[in-house]
Length: 182
Image 1 (cartoon, rainbow, N blue to C red):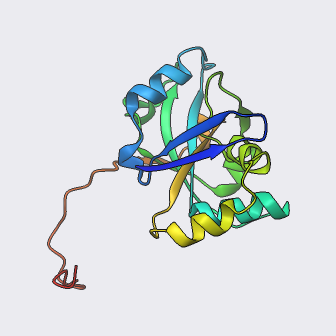
Image 2 (cartoon, rainbow, N blue to C red):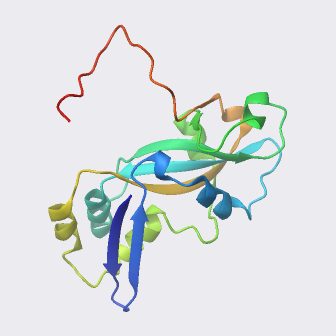
Image 3 (tube, rainbow, N blue to C red):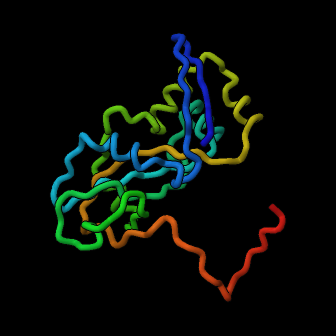
C-alpha cells in the first residue's frame, strides 16, 4: 500500500491508501461497495484496475491531458444469474479474459461510497493547496504503481475466461530468472 495525503484549498485533508497490486485490493471492500448493486441476469460486474505511478496521474490531471495510456487489468467482482458454469463458479478478483472493445462497450457503474477512482483523485489534485504536489511526488517516487478502480457491467457472453490470480509457480524449462540481485 502507498499512502498519499493532499490538503485542499477548502481546508480538507484527503488521505489515500492506494493498493499497489491486485492482491492488496480487499475482497471485503469490493463486496461492501458493490453490495447495493443488483446485477441483471446474464451480466457480470467487472472492476477495471488502472495501474500507474502517482506522478504520471498528477501530471495528467494538472495538464488536462486526454487519452493517457494507463495499464488496465479487469477483475471479476460478481455475476447475476446465469447458466454458464465457469461464471457461476467465478471467484472474486479472478482476471477476466475478454476483448478490450467489450470492456469499452460495457456500462459504466458509479458505485456509492467508492472514491478510489482516477476522476476523484484528479479532482483532489486540481484542488490541492500545494501547487508543488507533482514535484514533491516525483522527488519521493518509489517506482511503485498505484491502482485505481472503475466498474463496468458486461454481458456474460463477452467473458471468454476467468484466470486465477494466485497461480502456483511451475517448473519452466524454457526461461529461467535469477533473483539473486534483489
